Length: 339
Image (tube, helix red, strand yellow):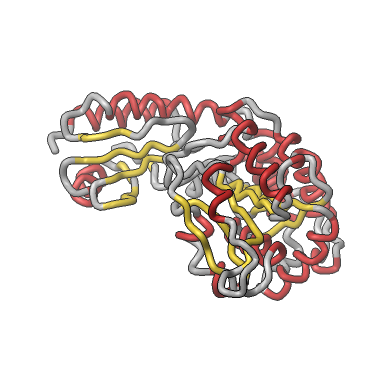
């Protein structure tokens, strides 16, 4: 029986080429700034997105939380969509790490607009927290991989500049967004004060995210990373995997998107599926008539691993370890289900 793991694009294993790059990496003590492979990754990622500098961290949660700490003060408030990863899936870190409250908006599949943001910016009043930051997520996990385009982002950035707010991007799957929209990564630096670029999701690196910003922000961010326990010494072995991923795994993301569309099309034909969210990238969200856990148990009997995001909602995530023959097998399993 074939196994197909669609729980997340974080479950990938390093490819042979990636392992070779890791094995041959030149390393040093990164806390002293002496790991040349990490230095190269940080410079490479910053240049890709038109930013001045970068900071390699163990996770996207850490890069996001460091950015929030850099761009806010206690008693401030940030604005984000109610589905935002920084709010829902980072352990309450906004309050714990930064002493900041959160104003949540109800965007369309996690996408918010300048028109939604503007009336939620607090006036200067001692009764209100000080609005200082807007956080966007691209792609939106809870939105089924929905994407911001640069045309969506531009008016938000203009509003933030006019209101003296910082703008941060949780770019957990930013390369999936770029593959879908055709926008250029280098143009993002025009609009954002901070960008978190995750390398362990769609790109298949085993560990790591890079926080991008101006040099002054990254200097302070490096101090915060140390306080959070993120100084990783000879981590160039991990950075080498990330560099390999940037060089070899970006263009192939369109394959994952094509696989997601195949699955979406098949799911929409099934009587036991009540709704399939529109697919843009590599995430497929669909609702089932039976409870999701019941369906997941039946899928597991056929070697299919997936996750539930609500009582009747299941998530499939395609990635570089999901191949065409596995997609074909899964389609056959889905057609044969009698849920």
